[in-house]
Image 1: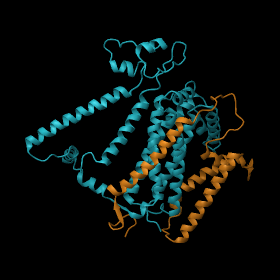
Image 2: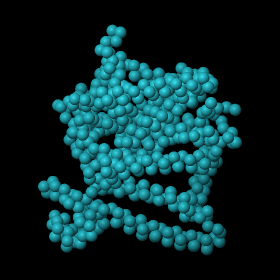
Image 3: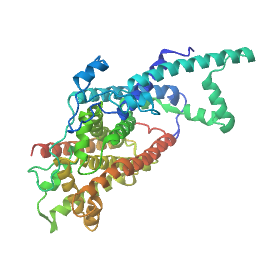
Image 4: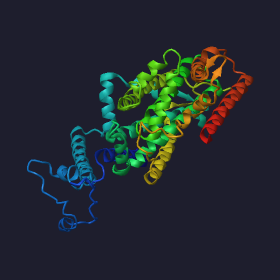
Amino acid sequence: MRFFSLKRLGLLAILVIALGLFIFISTHAKAYSPNADGQLNEPAPPNWTLAEIQQSSPQLVITPPPPGEDTCLSCHILGQNKGLWTPLGRWILFGGLGLVFAFGVYRSASTWKTRAPWKPLTNRAFDWFDERYQIAVPLQKILKKPVPRYALHWWYCLGGITAFLFVVQGVTGILLAFYYKPTPDAAYASIQYIENQVYFGSSIRAIHHWCANGMIVVCVAHMLRVFIMGAYKRPRELNWVSGVLLLVLTLVFGFTGYLLPWDQRAFWATTVGSEIAGAIPAIGNLALVYLRVGWNVTGETLSRFYGLHVIVVPLATVAFMGAHFLMVRRQGIAKPL
Amino acid sequence: MSDTEHSQEDSIPFYPDHVRTEFFVVLGVLVIVLIIGIVGLFNPVGTGEPADPLNTPLHVKPEWYFLSLYQILKKIPPMVLGIEGKIVGVVIPILLVGLIFIWPFLDNKPDKSKRAYWIRLAVAIVALITIIALTIWGEVS
């Protein structure tokens, strides 16, 4: 098998693009730094020269970096030209070429010395681990586990799609959390900042928003499929129970995430929602005070919901999802009628 | 043969066959996600008016997935069988979720008949239509 087969290159390209986008979005917003009046500066005109930009907007004076400061960082991360692509591209290009060169030298020298055929690095890494932890046999068992043919219909994919959408929510959620500020004064403005200033910010927010809705739809569809086919029956009772818990957690995600933009709709939906929780007999008031952190929806509520949304509920979801998957693995996929 | 063991003939190996299928499913979903991202670039989700605790808007609506429950709560009469309607409207959904939660322990007969299948299908469709109808009712009212 050729080392650079089309399949491998395709996978590598997807990985590099995904990683590049993640770094790109998480490192910088658009380069309009506010001037003294708090107004945003116009972006630099394309193909500018130093003299031109000093003439057209004197507030954007390019100063040489202070001594002892990194030249690339002081301009591309901290300075006026907040484009990461130039340094990143150079690092990837020259660093990659250097790695390929070093690898070639090592491979040639090693083949020359040992007079043995070259063994790919991936095999060596695997052998290194196998020698220490004996992973070959269990791994073979995990990978070769037979999956029944009837599980290839599209309706068996719904659970997997839910899990993938959860991963999408995780990645976009991390990117949003880099810029979001969970205080009543700053929350609304930070959402606007994400939508207007952060590169691809509105994309990220749209994906997070619509995939949250999609996740609930697919989750319910998965549950209906399992119910209609009777796949919840003995011995798979606990799988159904953990699945219902996961659906409830998804709804809690929706409820807590809805407050975070801190606009009128969010505020009053949360007010009414926690009021409904307050109507539960016996524990209602406790639930209400716990959710709102007091008797009213305030900044404390926002912090509480943010903590629930980004830490507590994701951890619980990952735990139950792991249990859910392990049970599916152990028991196989239920046979249809 | 037991329900949880699969023979080699009617099955495919998890890797690479099944993983490959799942990978293409993931790629398909990823394409949809990217389309949402591109559309979002030109049509942002946007924000409403900033929150104002002193100014209650006329129509408060929850997200669509809570709308059916909210509609039950809104339309329930103030007194049902001597119990306050609001409490009934809150307790019934909780009991329903509890019922769904413990359902495998109630329906525990290993019934593989076509009849049970059709009954479950009918129950699922009726439940789905009820929820969709309540959601649409809540959306237009």
